[in-house]
Length: 336
Image 1: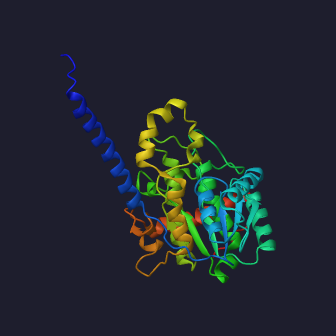
Image 2: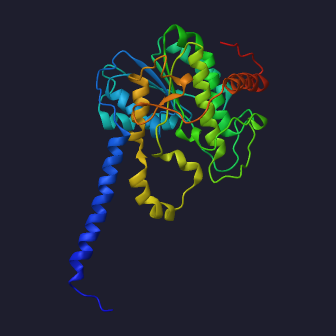
Image 3: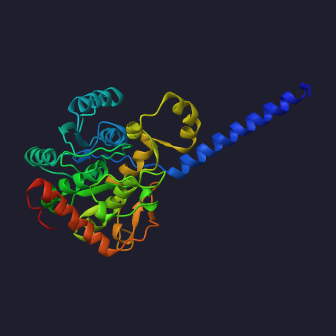
């Protein structure tokens, strides 16, 4: 059938309508995701952020520095940390007015590095108002920590477990806000697989079950910290378009195919960081809404997890984590 010129306006109208619907959906998502509206000064406050040189950590650091906070940037690679500071200063101007950016070396895949970092922090930073356990990763192929644990368990869980344990006295005495970056993936095909803790397991799933499991560990860990008197807040930043997926080595055609989906469905690092900023500066727990009762921050508000937590698993994971550190580290981790 020959093309009829009169159909052109109709096709154009349909295309415009489709494009308008996509833009409307994106704007709806932006509103649903929420934003931190507060701009009160954080002058005199000190925040420690792990993985602060990239992704969500970088965006959180930038937002806090803009409000004149002092930020300890705990990073595995110091050259990248210094490059991030140079970039922040270029974007924000003299952020040191009322605060400062302090780079410190921390590799959560090494117990020795965690201990060295904690010792240096104790010597140089007298007060800590907030600890943001942000650093984490998702790996596609087997990777292991210096102690031989698979990387999700070792970095996403054990590394921050040891860090908080080493700092626990001051965190409790100073009422330090402890922020745990989990994920809604803890609700999806996640379990605490005690038979395989620390081992690389190829589950029969399209999802990265080891990552999901580690995010569930984060939530269980936050629950136990809350029971032990810590000012702890757990959150999901949402699925964000950052370099978090660098371990998956995407090809050029992946970007071509998935760019529209990324633009429509994924948050930017700055948008995902809103949940971390809220947890670090404003979120308040109550006897009814806290990690123990299953509440966490998502879309800059409290919501209840769909996962059914149980106390036996919660306590056992804590004990297994203590033993895992003692087996490899040769030191005793004192119970809180």
